[in-house]
Image (tube, rainbow, N blue to C red):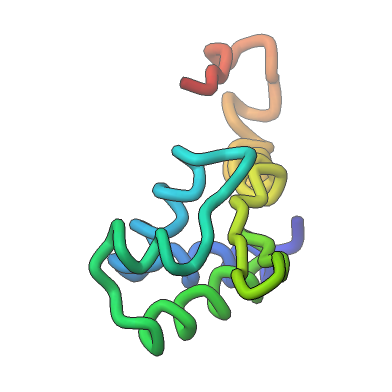
Length: 105
């Protein structure tokens, strides 16, 4: 991950609704949710949700797939893993053996 990509990911998540959308999609991984279910779950109007989905997709945090009349959104877990790796690549002075193990909950 480049510095610019990291800034784009962090900027996308630095907004309350987008963070809530991403967390909801992570909770529903790997299947994801339709845009309608996201709107209903988070009580977001369609135009607002569309704007936020575009920002998350631009940052590579979610993928959207057309399924007939519906659009399904899925969290791109690899992108957030890349972000974590980027943030911790020099952890413990570059000595990975000195770092506590990372665990995904």
